Image 1 (cartoon, helix red, strand yellow):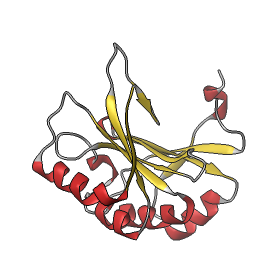
Image 2 (tube, one colour; image 1 turned 180 degrees about the vertical axis):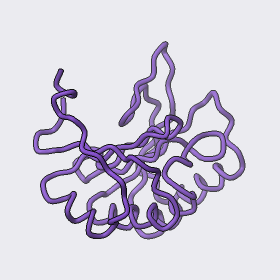
Image 3 (spheres, one colour; image 1 turned 30 degrees about the horizontal axis):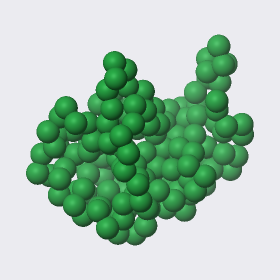
Image 4 (cartoon, one colour; image 1 turned 60 degrees about the vertical axis):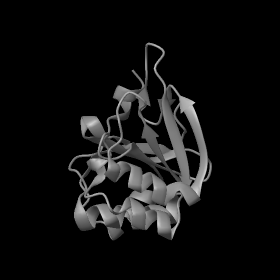
Amino acid sequence: MAETGLTTYDVKAEPIGSVYKAVLRHAAEVCQSAILVLRPTIRLEVSGAAILTALLPFERRREDSTSWPGTELFFGETASVIEFELNEPVLEILARAPGLFAWVQPSLPEDLCLLRADGSAWLTTIAHERAAYLQLRDGELASLSAVVPSLKLERRDQSRLNA
C-alpha cells in the first residue's frame, strides 16, 4: 500500500557525475539509510567487493529477502539486502560510482535505494532496467529541484497506479 501524501516521479535521464553526486548530497538531508543488494547467483567483481568492504563499518542490517524497493523475486529466489547508515563517509563511498545506474552486479552491488528514517523509500533504483523513481512528500520536489535543477523527473500518472 502506498503511503498517502507521496507523489512518484520517474527519473527520465540517468543522474551521472556531478548531478548524481548532488542527488546523494541532497538525500543526506532527507534520508537516514541506504540499501544495496547482492545476488548470490552473480559473482561480485573486485570493484564491488571493495565498495562493500569500505561500507562494512556502517552496516546496520543484512538479511536474505525476496523483495526490496522496486523489486520482487520469484521462484524461491532470494538476495542479500544490506542496509547502511547514510552519513558523510557512506556518501563519499556511494559517490565512487559514475552514476545511478552503475549499481549492477557483477561490477557493483545492485539497486541503490535511499530510505527515510521511517524506512520508506525516497529513491528507488532498478539499475539493470535503467529505471529509478523518487517518492516525494509535499515540498520535497521544490527543495530537490532547487539543489539539483538539471535532474530530469516526470510525475507518474497516479491514476495508472490505482488501476
